[in-house]
Each structure stands twice: as C-alpha cells, then as structure tokens.
Image 1 (cartoon, rainbow, N blue to C red):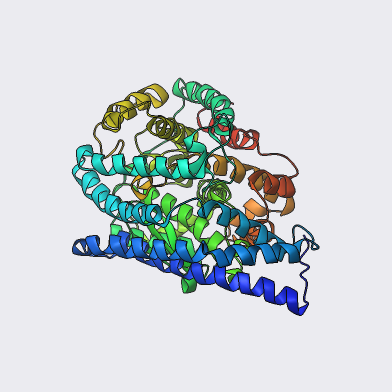
Image 2 (tube, one colour):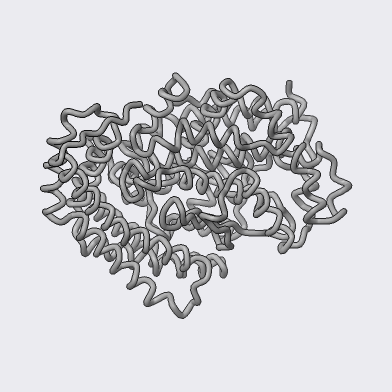
Length: 514
C-alpha cells in the first residue's frame, strides 16, 4: 500500500479545499444519522411527523451542498493534481471515489432526495406499528410509495445495458453489483446448501436445542451482551448499545457509533447473536480513520465488506466451541446458577442447531442465506412490476414454503420482519450473503496468519483477530472493491468454498454425518 501525497502549495490548496467541502456536506448526513438512531430508540411517537421533515431537510441540504457546481470544479482541479500520484494513495482514492459519488448524486434531483428521506422516516414509523399489530395492510401504502420512489431513483441513475432497475439501487450498497452477478452466486449456492440441509433433515443424531428455549431475565441479558460486546473489542467510549425493534448499527462517525439489539426472554442467543453481529459492524466503524471522517478513505468499502465483519464475529467467533469454552463460565456472573445444568456441549449445540424458521436474524448458519435469496427475488419482482405490492404476504409465504419448508404464521413473522424496505433500502439484502462468504474466506486466512487464534478464544483473547482485521480491512477505507480486497488479503477471488467448508466441518459431526 502506498500513501504518498503531494505537498506543493497548489496541490495542498486544491485537495484541502475539495476535502473540506465534502466533509462539510458529510456533517449534515452524520447529524441525520443521530436523528435516525434516535427515531428507532428513544423518540416519542408524537415526534414522528416533524422528525420526517427534519430528516428530509437535512437530506436535501446535504445533497445540494455536495452537488453544487463548485464541487464539480474542485473535483476537476483535484483530478489534475492526483494524476501524477500512485492510484492507490489516500488522496487519489479520495478524489476517485468523490468523483464517483458526485457523478451519481448529480443525476438525482434534490426534490427526490428530500421525498425519499421523508417517506423513509414516515414508513419506518408505520412499519413499527404494522409489525406490532402483524397487519401488512397498515404498511402496504408506504411500501408502494417507497418502491415507486426507488424506481424513479433507479431511472435517474440508469443501469448497464441488459441490466435492470435493481442494479442501479444495489450500486449504492455494493459498487458495480448487478442482479446477474448475484444470480451467478445464488443459484449454485442454493443447490449446495439444499444438499447439506437434505442430509441434516434425515440425520439420526440431533443437537440439543434446550438452551434456546430457556427463559432468562431480560435485564440480566442486557448486562451479559454488553459485557460480551466490550470483551470482543467494541469501545463504549466511542459508542452505545440500545434497544430497537430491529437490530442495527448506525451513528455519526467512527467515534460515535450507535448500535442496537433486541431481546426475547426465552432465547438469550437472539440478543447475543444480534449483539455480536452489530458489534462487528461497530468495530469496523471504530477502526476507520477519524482524520478521514467524511471522506472515502474514512468510510467502509461497501456493505458486503461491512457484513463480512458482522457475520465473522457472529458466526466464526460467536458460534465456535472455543468461544463457548470461555463464555460458559461467564454466565454465572449474570444469571447466577440458573444455567449451571447446561454443559459446554449443550451451549455449543444450541448455538449451531439447524432448524428452518421464519426469522432471518434468528436463523442458523445453514439456512440464513435462503432468507436472503427470497428477499432478493422479491425485490426484483417488485421493481420490475412482476408482482403487486398487495400480493407480497402471500408470495412471501409461498417462497418460505418452497425454500425452507416452513409455513409462515403471520405478517409479523413474515414480510414485516425486516426494517430495510421501510427505510428505502432496496438492493441491500444480497450483501449479507456476499459478506458471509467473505467472512469465512477472511477467517481462513486469519487462522493461517495468527498462530493459536481460536485457542486464544478459550481465554477470552479476541484482540489478535481484531488487530488483524484493523490491519487488513478497516484501514483500507474505500481503496478497494469487494473482489479486489478479497484477492489482496486472501490471495484468491471470492468463493463459497470456505463457507461450505466451515459449515460442513461444524455441522456434519454435530449431526453424526461424518
């Protein structure tokens, strides 16, 4: 990695003026991040109408600040400066990515940006109520409006010849990702996962699920998962953990990370898994360069890389035998002797039992990606006009029966379970699976690079892994695209093979299928 920057007065002026202007525009977006977090955690219901206007105004102002003609002039001047620099140096990467963002942003009118932000805020509020009441019809008009606005957004942005509207939206979450790319990954992956699930379904040996059905006080769970987040490396001096209807990680910048989780009395793994997941996101954010805050080099590479961090801490770490060798003795400090009758094997089995279900964020590793594939299909159908929004619950339920063999009982545990579409985040879901694949591939490399990595987990030693991720992933900002980063760190293109090796090495012995 090169870090050379030019330092002549003219160079300094051109770059610093551009970077300062971009960072100023980012201040508005980072402020909106705190208001959005507040909306999902602490905001009283009565504040919802004005909050949507506040977020709309901030989105419009940020968009207008970033798309001003002066920014275009500054970019052009900066491009002349960095032309003689190494293409991967920090300044050159910042200018390259600012150009990319600017070219996209200038295709979108401020009025559409404002309407998307206001609709997203109102739709999230409606989604919370619809989910609470398990009534899709309360959310349907908001989803119809959200899809319509996203189609307009995609049309403004355009998409490659032979592509579709979904491609234009997905590019926001994973640069250059297309539906065709995702299909090439998902179709063979589904077949491989289905083969594994078919073997597990007829296995004669079944892990114990008892710990997942054991009630534990939620106030004690809160203290337990907060402790776990701190121990694996989340810095509470620069972040928070709160409750929300759907777990998420947001905030303002790398020193103000806001993550949330949710709790169910009968399954501490729900809260722990969500907290480990969001902590992975949070530690990635905290690992970004504060001096570059608001610039591409101080931002995450893309959501697939972001999800690789969350899924790695949730799965490769949090579901491992080595993790539970350390975590089991910690239970008594939070739950007294309530868990004493559960052996290490009980806990490990409960963390890894395969049981097709309705809820994506509560699903096991073997079925998780099926949930993502269903959402990908539905997003394309909604955008392409291949289904009416009012038909979503029925089609959702049909796909769950087809992919996972389960009968969805109600809207709350069906099409209303995720917050993403209410936020307007269409095109996001496949990054969960791409991130899951990358997580397994990165972890294989970390295991080779760090002697005794997993043995360290048994002693509560997680810093070596976090340090490795800081060095190989977090520090890179937006320097590399997904596959570039994967090749640079692991020496190979992104592949499903490491994830399948991870699943088979764990699940085949658990189910007596070796």
